[in-house]
Image (tube, rainbow, N blue to C red):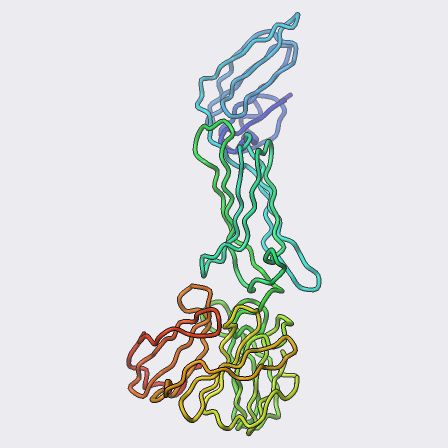
Length: 397
């Protein structure tokens, strides 16, 4: 009967059925193995490589064996407590994880699901680190460390920051690094991905999947959310009819901190807010006719609530900070001195340069595409030209 089977590369395993016929009972596992078979009180060591089996009779033994899973070295007992060793002379394999169970998702909604990972080791680790990172910005959102691990490493993440705030929905990456306790060989490094849902909404994401969506208004007065499909297009829509064709939609961001993006609609001189599904939330302002452009800009100051930007007839740029109550604060001047003179399109595009701060894009009459990088505190840097020839487009959104 097989008492121990070991794939030296995977640290566990079985043999091909053709090999088992010559060796006796056991389990099948593809690949090479080192294992021990005791019968007739004799210890037999078999090196298996491909389809070749080499049998070595060690000695008459009393059935007590210990196998070093890294090198294949064998210790066994003889009569009267005599202990013998068989050195296989094989090089030690590096620290690795032959088996792991790692969750694919983390959810922070009404029924939260914690992301968990566990990695079993072929030998002890001196210490380890698990980091979780936003691949778009390179920002590390979680770091977990541990000391010596004998058999396995376990880590978890609830999808939130240490202070309880929410991270944005979407994909994240995890990386495990562990150092071998014996100091031999390279570090163990493993990585993968995890998807966060139920967190803070990504700019212009109205479906909660971490992908930006499009808002359209038809000639018959139907507003629709058209959902991004992760492949550069759109698939599926949620539509609401009965809107005046003169309505102007402003995809805004999360106005009241409920982790759902809202849409502002300008109807005449009124500005009204609508929660997901274009359900009425209420009027948040009047006399907005003074502005020639009103648009959402995402979270400009890092409080997790979206802001509103507006350009007036004097070509000044104003900021309206959102509040957790679903309203906006009094306006604050961002750029004066005819900053918007000659510019005819303004778009809050979220983070363009992977610094984690929402940016602003505009176009001038010459067709130049311009960027003002966000500061993270509600203001923007100087204007930088990032493209030309954009005058041929009727609109940018």
